[in-house]
Every structure is written in C-alpha cells, then in structure tokens.
Amino acid sequence: MSMRLYLWQRATAALMVPLVLVHIAVIFYATRNGMTAADILSRTRGSIVWASYYGLFVVAASIHASIGVRNVLAEWSPLTDRRAERLALAFGLLLAALGARAVYAVVLS
Amino acid sequence: MLGDLSVSLWRGGTEGRYETYSVPQRESQTVLDVVTFVQRHIDPTLSYRFACRVGVCGSCAMTVNGRPRWTCRTHVSKVAGSGRLEIGPLENLPVIKDLATDMEPFFEKWQKAQGVFAPTKTRHDEIEQVRPDSPARRLADAAIECINCGVCYAACDTVRWNQDYFGPAALTRAWTLVNDERDAGGTARLQAVATKGGCHSCHSHQSCQELCPQALNPTAAIAGLKRRTTAAYLKGEIKA
Image (cartoon, one colour):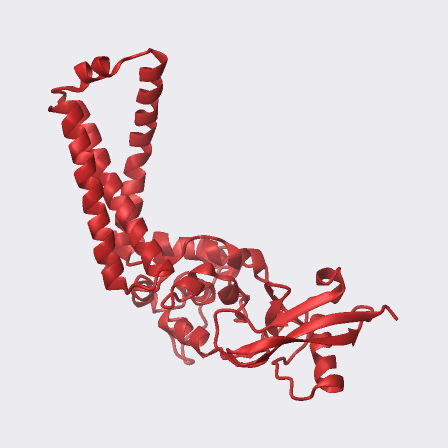
C-alpha cells in the first residue's frame, strides 16, 4: 500500500470513530423511544446538520472501504494492482452513490 | 533408548514431497540433530543449511511442525510430543533443494529498505559518544540483536500475499538505523521504507514478534516507522 492510501485510510478511520459512536447512539435513542419512520423523517428533513453529518459519513466510509477492498484484491486475488485499483474505485463510487441516495432520501425528499 | 521418532522431511525443490524416516530419539536432542542424523546415517543426499549450532548464525531456520524455528535451539521434546516431526524449508522463499532455501529475496529487500549503516564520520574522527540510556539509543538497541535468520519473513502473512513487501527483518533493521544517531541515511531511508512494499503494507498480524527466536518485536519497529514516515511526510521531508 502506498503511503498516500495509508494516510487516507487512517484519516478516514479516525474521522469515523466519533461518527460511528453518534450513529449508534442515535439508533439506540430512536429505538428506545419508539420513534416511527415518520417521527425520524420529520426531524431529518431539511436539516443541514444531519445532511452534513451523514454526507461526511458516506464520503469517509466510501474512501475507507474502497482502499481496504483494493488491498484485499491486490493481496488475495490474481488481479494486477492496476485492475484492483480500478475495481476498488468503482466499489467506492458505488458506495458513495448509494450513500448519497440514502442521505437525499432522509434529508431532502 | 527413548524409542524412534517418525520424521517427515521435505525432499526436492519447489515441487517435491515429504519423505518419512525413522530416527532414534535421544535426551536433549535438537531438531537439527535429527536432520543431521538423517543425512549422516540414512540419506547423505539430504541438503540443509547450518553453521554454528548454538543460535548465533541464524542459518538453520526451517519449518518445524508448521512453524518457522531455529532448528539448533529447538528441542525435539518441546515440539514432538506425539513422536512425529515434519520438517520443511522456510516458507515465502524459493526452495533450492530439500530444506535449503534461497535467501536472496530476503537480503535484496534488506537492501531496498536501506539496511546498510551510512557513516557520518571517518576513522580519523573522534569516536562518537552515544549515551546508552538516551531514548533513541534504547529504540535502536531494542532490535539490534536481529541476526537475519528469516523466521519472521517466513512467518509473515503479508510477505506471503504481497511479493513487494520488504518483510519484518528489513524494516526492523531500517528502524534501528533511523534511531542510530551516528547514521546519516535518515531521510533517504524513511523515503525508502515509505515506498511500495514498505512499512505501510504491514497488517500488524504480529506473527513476527510471536515467533522471533530473539524475542524481538518487529511489529513495534514497523509501527515506529509508520509514525516517523507520516511525520516526515507531513513536514514535507519525504514524498508519498
């Protein structure tokens, strides 16, 4: 792994530590208080804070996961490094698109 | 007499097979004694490598019952409880013949990690005063006893999966020199270990420190290189 990829993966991991903790706390809060989907959507729709929070989460997770997948492919599959990088990039873009769609659904739709 | 051991030895090159021999078990017998017995009394064509027989030279490492070990310092009684031994060449290295591996890739990577001391003085200068209790010297001393036996290299999953990876021994050597205040190769060495195959490829599985016969901790040395290269990169001293 190149140093640049190493730093991106570690930086996004560090960024996701508080994001994951807040995300889990929100899940506990929502389920313990018996919130319905409508209750949740009424709080998230139009919220710049939640859009930024989960938007950042999606970007960090996409970068972090795609670098990890690139390493798995490079080390465990017969693919060349170049092909592994292209596949991992495609995977990262797919994650980002799916995540952006989810964020759009709960904040803007 | 303690009876006989059933000893399977790798025979051949990369393509080969295990052949089983019966070797008399003795008190205080090492795995190297067993291999030597086979060569001297059963099959003189058996090839293997050793020199000092006392854990100093690092040349007799082999795979013993699935784990890389110094055969000269491994007592049969500790590893062959069932009376069976399987001895093969070190993993992750090309097999020359039988139990002897080609160490060239190991030492080539040692060179790539710039494991050679870069002196700052000549023989005409005063001898450098180095405090043994300084933090840098303690870090350098922690790994200086590596004798390049190749056990960590054979034990490393990352070496197995990534042919470019320098391996624990080469990076540990680099870490020793990075902390040696008499050495002048600092930034160039950090650049060398920050390239493809360098310290950032390590997954920290820690097989190296688990199996190092010298009880060194290459994983900690590699973690140190990761920190030091990151700091150098953020300061603009090296390129990614």
